Image (cartoon, rainbow, N blue to C red; front, side, top):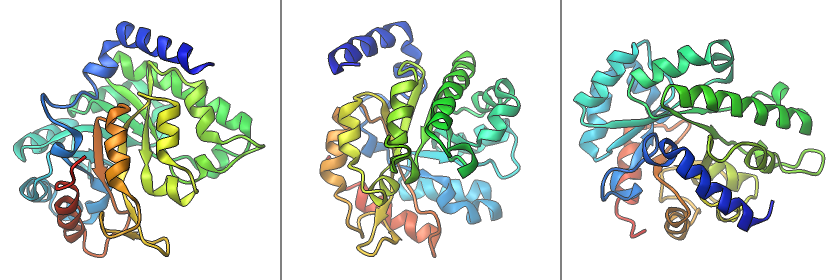
Length: 279
């Protein structure tokens, strides 16, 4: 599809499905993503397991305004919503696993809507799910069905990448299949900037190719030798990247580190650096 034709369809989709761009993933009034810096709670999962409410309050005290969940640590949807509100936070999205979506998508989406989330995001796919290009095409079809279930619950549906989505399979980059074969009115993309760069991909090139599709990013930094480090302590040029990403439709930016030695120290340092950026 030519870019002009795609943009026309995207505009029509926004009119037909304003919930996608105005409700589930809307930014707060007059707020830019970096005025509402978020954190993917997988980064502090060990602390949440010990003190769920206290960890949320500590993140809010640092300055975070948004969190993205990766599991509720035994809480009910109502308890999650209450804890988030009590901490003065918003939780616009949550990571979910593929198996749970397949088991009962209506129930999963209903519970996440009850918890106050506005989007559910598939976080990962096992190697068995992505061996061939046809596997990726089937996943794209499946994601469109999941997105329809999410829409019925008033949620957006998204997919979060690792590095393998940018490694060609049978001569084609899987991320291209996901972006091209899913409905832009239904499926949003959450781009993990660390994993994209690990694969040698240019995140901005993909955002420019499909403007409006990447509404969320994981701001995760990379040292010269490839290690995850505090945001701002690595080699990824976030300033220009995020400035352009905002113009291309970015709404939410979540800092993340998969295994920080000091989770709260990571949260403080990353917020301190990112919140000062002029993007």
